[in-house]
Length: 214
Image 1 (tube, one colour):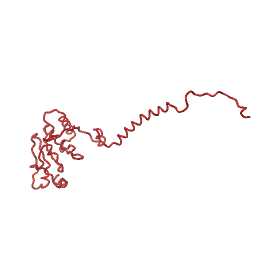
Image 2 (cartoon, rainbow, N blue to C red):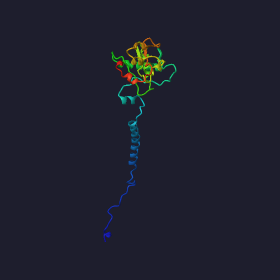
Image 3 (tube, rainbow, N blue to C red):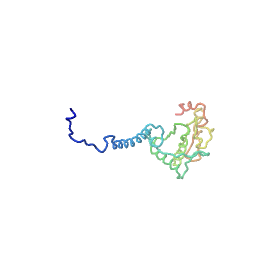
Image 4 (cartoon, one colour):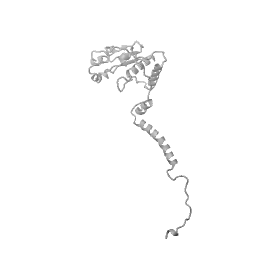
């Protein structure tokens, strides 16, 4: 009885395109994900990496300005002094730039420069020795002191025998050893003197901790 009373008010209308899924929405979402995922991976990589790769990484982590960048050089059998007077090769220019920046930073009464490293073999003796030579060529009076008495590297840089007397002889017996007698004149420049580390002692930590070092 109810069916007989029904009538069609209006013919139904249908879109030619399907209501779902909407292809444009999926394409837009895929595009956003395609851009966001690589950017996120790169960001996480930079955020989580522990390796220092360049100068910017060092400055960002330490907050310390970089004075110079030095290229790696091959080791030679006759010392490791690569700075020569009146030469304009790459290494000479690098150390000249380091020298200029360092002198610009130092105050008028600041005359002591300490070189250190996180572990042996990173080049502190090489840099200290060549910078000392560069300063000597500039006319500065320089004394290089080899305080790495556990694994002395300054002797190798200047091609000095490890048996040469040095700072350890003075620290072991300061009452009977004259410090200035341990200083060696350098044949590289009349402005450069060298105080080697001396023979390797059995107690390097105790020697360095003595008050006489002041």
